[in-house]
Image 1 (cartoon, one colour):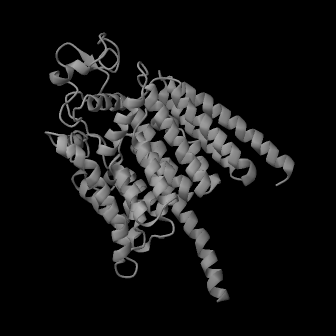
Image 2 (cartoon, rainbow, N blue to C red):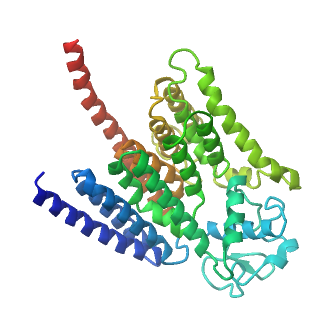
Image 3 (cartoon, rainbow, N blue to C red):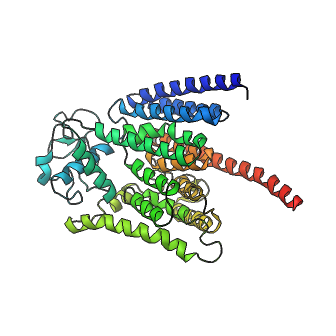
Length: 443
């Protein structure tokens, strides 16, 4: 590429990223037409990746980092726009600071009334997105009548944020914490992986929306998984993955990736134990302090959440949407679990131990395609694994999650994502086959 051509592409990339930042600011401000703005953001993101693919690595590094910081910062411009989960984070931190286990009381419990303030429990219950408490008052938190669902590492993070929050800071420190963790993920990807693929995390609209503006604690789990795969090996990797699971349970899908190829020739017991034992010990150690001081179950609302999300009734909330295109509704849960188990088995037998993130991406992405959840922040781990592995087609799963969250049932969006993943697999396989054929002819 000529110097002139590279410069022109750089200007084009900067212009697209500038437009993306403007769209993301509009998304953070909320209001009507959010689905359209989200789709515009994803389109600009795809265009930026396309233009950047041929830029020289020397120029691209600064663009990825600077652009990633600018994209991430857009999540700080307004209060949470599409989720109220971070209000529960703030409450759980406040409850712990008062010396009370967050697993013992629901926010609506009168015993905790002395912790209420005008921010989390506003006096004007006519405002939108408020949950009634049944006594004429209301709260910004969703599900105020149930106990917390969050695991202990997440709860420790909520307490830390509460301790560090100045008086009256409200949601801002949680958003800032999300931004710092998102940037830490980006820097780790640029330092230990390919800066070209790191752009798929740094510029992705899901990051400022879900990790920063909505401040979802999922980004803490993502950071721990990225550090586990990028920085450490052996027992340290297992320990970090255990901490990720104790921050948000979804990172458990990264464990098969860490065990990639362990069943290829018999059972590599030592490698299994080096990962599984530290992970299990960290999870147990994280739960133990809360188990000792809590009167109730430290699993909180976990099983209630599973029932609420109607995973036993696929038609209730369009669960297993792609599986149900081919099978009766009653078969869908069992078929999804079986297919996911086969994916895990494939990773354990055929996965590349030198590229554990590839197996983690396959398992996590397959889980989302098979169960089709309507929560876009679940896909943050998929975005991070794409940034490590480079299989861009899996980003469509994250985009489908955003459509499902903003517009309801999104069978078509998940179907497009499944098709994109299938096409990507076929294209990559066809590219490998000629290389293998030439290698065999020369040998």
